[in-house]
Length: 93
Image 1 (cartoon, helix red, strand yellow):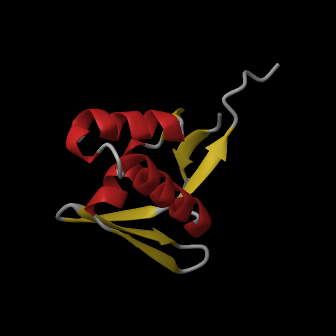
Image 2: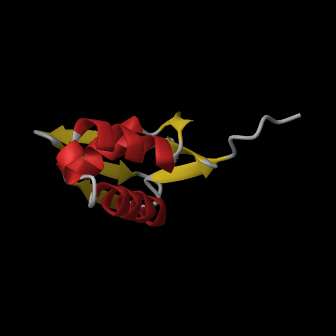
């Protein structure tokens, strides 16, 4: 499984629980609501999508039926927007 990592070089502006990510090279801004911001912050290159889903399932057990789909959907959108990148979890060498 691929590890998820924040795209390097983004300028981050925190607004309450939300984030505004700005890519200076393309002048692209990405607004993240509180949930998307929490997911993005957890993407430090050490976690997979499954790890993130498991984190949210542990924190919100009453939402078990919705969490896997919603977290994966948010990750997919962050990847499409260029806020996240995937890196191999396989050891190089």
